[in-house]
Every structure is written in C-alpha cells, then in structure tokens.
Length: 326
Image (cartoon, rainbow, N blue to C red; front, side, top):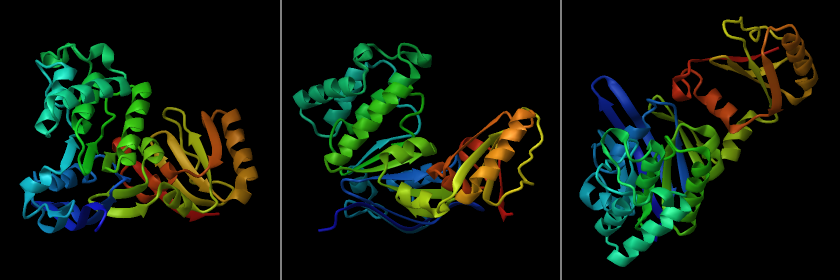
C-alpha cells in the first residue's frame, strides 16, 4: 500500500491569460513535512485551493490519501486538515470553544475534543487566553493568539494530510518555536504535512523536503541540504549598503559565482579560496563608509533560494542577479 497522502501531478491552473500554476508536481508521504516555498504571488495558495477542492485544475491530477480530489473533491476534502492563509473567524468564541467545536466536527467525542483543546493550549502557550472571547474588529484576542487558535483547530483531530498556509503569520518568536515543535509531533504521529511559506529560514528548520515555486512553476525540489549544496563549496558574503548609497558589488577584485541584490542587501557567493581578498575588499569599503557592514560565512538555503528566484523575491523585494565573473 502506498504511503503517499498527497500526489499532485502536472497541475495547471489559469486565470484568463495568467498561468497561476504550470504543470506542478508534488508528493507528500505519511510522516514527513514538505515545504512549499515561494515569494508572494508564486502560486502557492492557488495550488492549496485546488488540493482542498475550492478550485478545479485546468489540467493534471490530485490524489489525497488515494482519493481522486478532482473527481471527488468532497471526499478528498474530509481527509485534509487545512489552516488557510487568512485568520479563522473567531468572533464570539473563546479559543477553547473554537478548538472543541473543530474537533467535534472532525469526529472527536466531546471528552477527547475537550482534552485536545487543553493539550494544544499548553503546547502553544495560550492557556492565558483559552477562555477569553474574541470580539469584532480584532478586539479581545491578539492576531497571534487568533492564529495559534486557528492552528489548534486544524490539528485538534487527526487527519492523513495537514496543510498549513503561512501558519506563523502574526505569531511571536517564542510561540513560533512551539508551533514548529507541534508540527514535528504531527509528523512523528504519521501525518503528512504540506507547509506553505515564504520564510526560508523557518522552513529550513522543520521540513524534510522543499518544493520551490517561482511564477507558478517548480524551479527546484529536494531536501534543504541538497538545495543548499547546489552552491557547492561557496561562501556567502553579505554586504549591507547605506541608505541611498551606490552599489560597489558589480565590480569586485575577486571571483563571484552568484550575485543577488535584495533591497540594501547584496549577497555574493564566492569560492572558498577567494575568502581572503573578499574580506579585505569588504573591510576596506566598511572602513571608508561605502558599505554599512558585511558578513562572511557558509552559503545557506536562503542563498540558494534567492539564486533560484532571482527576478522576484520573498515578501516582494526586488531582486537582480548577475552570473559569475572574475
């Protein structure tokens, strides 16, 4: 029996002349977390909408736990626990009530739903607000607590496939760590998790495999280590430019394998044997005020991601890319 809980093969979705998804293929197995990584507008949420039956693909196949999600969207939807990108409407409810209701709707007995709400409140550190009612216009509960309550509603009852669309939006750093721990526990209990995000650093910590989308297409797939290793033994030289300052990086006295600019940051991937001249160059520019500062270290997954999606960046940063030169 296959351990695939999600198989997406050749899915294409168009909106008029715009192709939101172009022949996308993804596989999620039981007991693994797969990250769907891409900048805003890369086509991530459109794909999720098709997986859960809110949109019908123009071409391709989607199977959830063996069920044809295109032919039987209702059946497939019952096998998916989804935390959508937007906030869950909680007005008038407490987190405890909302999580218990979500659990009951997904088949949990009343007592188990109550226990799930209490357990998740402790795991996510929101017990202080578990009985505080959400009020209209964002009153009563903060955006972060609402987001965590939405996550708890999603995972209160077991499901073969859990889809999390930007689950850490509005969540503070300490509770983000708790949420990621909860995602790992889902994986350890055998659920397949599709994590949709544009946060490279957080994705690297929790996922087993990554699928990188850019302008509706899969541009890379594999483990974080494999994607980062695509830069071989390169080092990461990050230069921070002063506001309004000129960019000196197009003309450097050492070899550069990859150059990507994101706002005031310029990332240069340089061969390891060029470390000494690179540091000398960067230090001299810092000392003369041409750059605000610099760092040098091993190339990271973020560098690989920026190299793969050089024309448009995460969170809408404008990026430019120049290939290697000496």
